[in-house]
Structures are given as C-alpha cells and as structure tokens.
Length: 236
Image 1 (cartoon, helix red, strand yellow):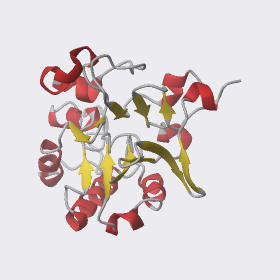
Image 2: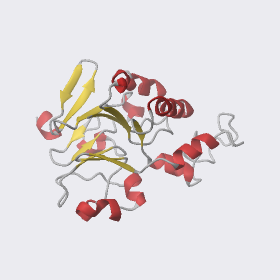
Image 3: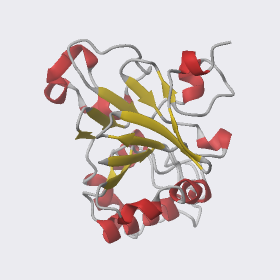
Image 4: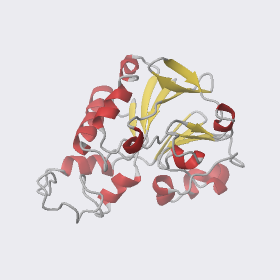
C-alpha cells in the first residue's frame, strides 16, 4: 500500500492542483490512497474550489481511497466562529463572496462527517497530533481538540507507542526553526510534519508513505526522494 499525503491547503486551489498533478495519476492503482490532513479553507482565494475538488475526488474514487480529515479551520466553521470564506465571520459578512442563504449546507454536511484521524499500518495520520502521554491508549484518551489543534508540535520518540505520526497544522518553518524552510520535516524518531505554509511558500509538500517497505518519501517533479531526519539533511 502506498499513501500520498498533503495538508493545510488553505483555499490555494492552484497550488493544490500542482500537488495533485504528482499524485492523481496513481489513484487508478489498486494499492494507492490519498490522505488529506485538514485545513482546506481560509487564506487563499478559492475556498469552495478546493472543497469542490476534494469532494469530486471522493465521488470518483470513494472515501476509502481519498481520505479527508478534519482540520481546525473546518472545526471553526462547524463551531460557528467562521464561515467558509472568512476566518472571523464578522469580517466581510456583507461581501457577496460569502453564502449565508443555505448554499453552503452541502459543504457543512461534508465537514460534519470528516474523521479526526486515520490509521494505516504503523502510521497515524492526523491534522495536529495525538496525546502522546497516553501511549497505546491514544485513540481513547486523546481529546478532540488535540487531534485538530495540538500546539506546539511535539518531536522525539513517542514512549509506549511503536507508531509514526504524520501531521500538519504547524508550519515546518516553525518546527525546524528555519523561517525559509517549507518542506517535510522528519524528526528522526516518530514524527513527520508536512505543513509547508503554502501562503508563504506557494507550494504544498507531498509525502508518500510506502507501507510495505516502511519508507517515507518526498514526492517531486523529479522523482520520489527518501526523507532523512531534518538535522541530518540540513546539518551545517
């Protein structure tokens, strides 16, 4: 099984299409899935375009093959703190780009059914993170707000849990401490972070997990490249 992963699209349809161009042709293959880790809206110019594209992929391939998870920005909408176009629903509420007449009902219903995490083999896919203190009881003891809003990002070996975590939510520039770094961050132990801060970098990193080989790759136009720990790749 091979899983392609992206996160934190934030309404950037053009950049999403560029990332999908590296993946979509593989979705016809039986042993391939696409995992999207949340935060599909807020920031870019085409929030509904991104949602429509994801929903169309799920309609074509099925929700088992195209898995979309809940992010904190989708949760903001469900909580009534935001609408689809505006992170703060009081901003631009008279703007015609908003749709408060029930036209967003389909998007809202879709968001309501987004799972908070997905597990395949030895890897947990989640928007923000899990309660790592819970060890192998993480599924039962992680609060909903942790799955979508955990901050700061946690690194290092997870004690009592022989699994990896793939997450977004916190930009890899923040995690690495390098404001110019917007690629996939691997801590060399239990965590891969893939939020490349698209609103700054103009790109959405694509991670491929080869479950059969237990290998994690950076997917680019020039090929798939094995991901090494950040400190090893960028030492010096």
